[in-house]
Length: 160
Image 1 (cartoon, rainbow, N blue to C red):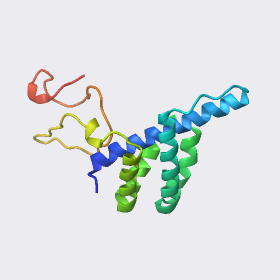
Image 2: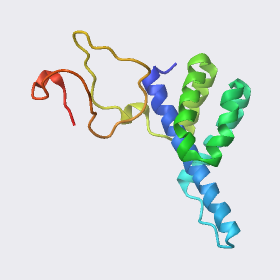
Image 3: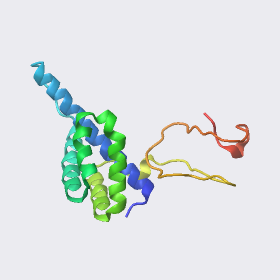
């Protein structure tokens, strides 16, 4: 089984691929209504379509009602429901090892980047510092923090 951070990266990638497909379907529907030629399906959209089919089937098998109800909401508004879908898939994967394994296998099938490819840097907690909640996702920029300490102190981390 993947560690929680790697699993979170896999789920983020899968939801991103699914979002590309959902966005494409909306564009195709708009083109149909306006009687225009729809755009060609890209490789990203094809991957997203495969991801959508597998996630839908797996959620029907392993998911509770709340997860199953989130899929149509996500497809109707992917920008708004991407994070809730990621959260629910992460929770479901934490409860079901077969579901987590299927998500990892799916990421390999559609050739999503390896979880390690998006993970760089480190987090150091010292003294009375605490980290709350799951850590999942990708940060490609600076991390902002709040807390006591001197931002010029090299031991204090970087404040953006």
